[in-house]
Length: 138
Image (tube, rainbow, N blue to C red; front, side):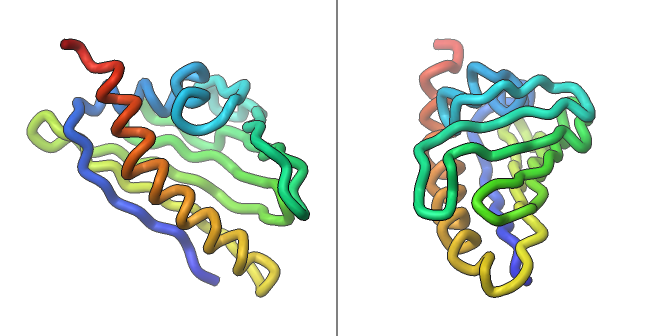
């Protein structure tokens, strides 16, 4: 079993990064359309294009929310059943973001894990920072 763990330093305050992670509209802009609400035990979905073995829906439940430090939710879809965690630490006006997706089990999860690893790297290195830049006070 191999987890995905990605750390990034973002040149934005933690409160702004937190908002990008916990606002349904903001998540839709940089991640996927969703019906997320920042409430423990809230069941929600992300919607994207279907792919072989994946109907395009990710089923999630908010497992833990501790503003503005930690967001944890289940992530089920396309044959995987994992947990996604975002942890935020403020460091001098910047934010240290640590992302993990854990729980990949068996050989059947190898290809989805690799694909998600590349996808999350792109999202956290490019799409999230671009979203934050476009929405930062001028």
